[in-house]
Length: 270
Image 1 (cartoon, one colour):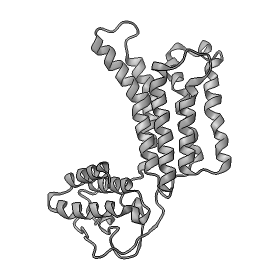
Image 2: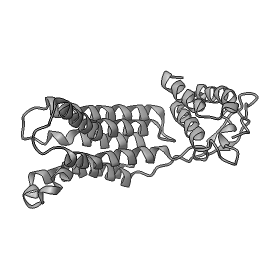
Image 3: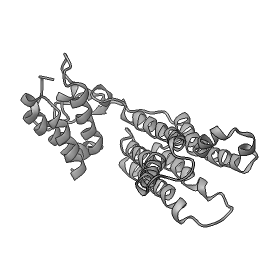
Image 4: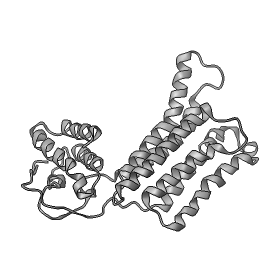
């Protein structure tokens, strides 16, 4: 169990009703600790505990999470005790990209009134266009269901490198006319296809970021009204996310076989 998994579980316990915290802490920590024995992601189970605590806090029915991974053999569906986390994270990345032009429009057109205002503008731009979508997509890959952990780690590593490339390129990128700016979105799409083990035909979509980015080298900006220029800046990453969604079928509700690990600690109060 990693430190991150423990922090997530402790957060889930903290937002649980006081009367049930001790039982839930012992139960959830045991489930996360034994996750790898069942070829499950400990982080995914930790987030499952957190979403259960958040969305079933006052539920009038019993949460299925109480039927822990230590219970007798049965089939459970992870979606029964969690929201569909992966689509939510992908949607967060998509909305973050769309928020970039809105942020740019809100900024001053000319000089900033202070250095602090300039810093806020730059930090907001970095967070919305690079850091937030990168973190959301890396987490989404790590939480993919039914995918071997090695493939998830490889995809997450490539996605993290792509996000880092998006941050570094504007600062250290070479002065060249080559379309280097398309490489991070392209690498991000590769990471997603690697992690989701897409069919061979799906790899043809890698041409999509290239085609969309090629629009920047056409008279597009000359014909487009000035008010839509900020939206054209994020055209490539937005199109890349859409393409990734189209070619991917999320499968977060697959049944898993649960083994017996002794007497379960069942929280029947939620």
